[in-house]
Image 1 (cartoon, one colour):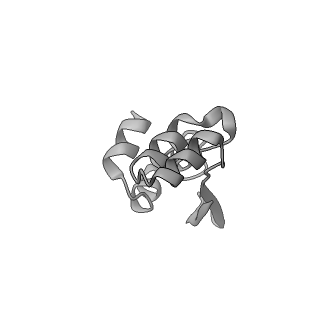
Image 2 (cartoon, helix red, strand yellow; image 1 turned 90 degrees about the vertical axis):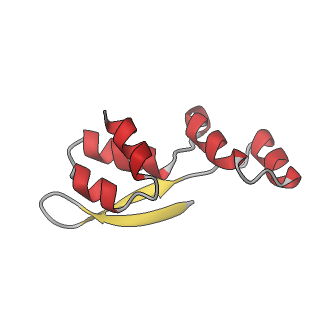
Length: 86
């Protein structure tokens, strides 16, 4: 799990979380050393409770809890968050 605290609309801070669940597929990927695969598994692993930082920030924008500008400022993949929100 990775966490960032981002400024909320109206004050305060909200957590944005990236969550990786140790499924069988994730364990195999890590064991094999496939560095590019975990992100893909996180982005498609919603049923297993996984979420990318992009998804977490995007959900907070869609729910009106943070601004799109805040999401862009705290995202390591600004192009992806732009596509996620459109």
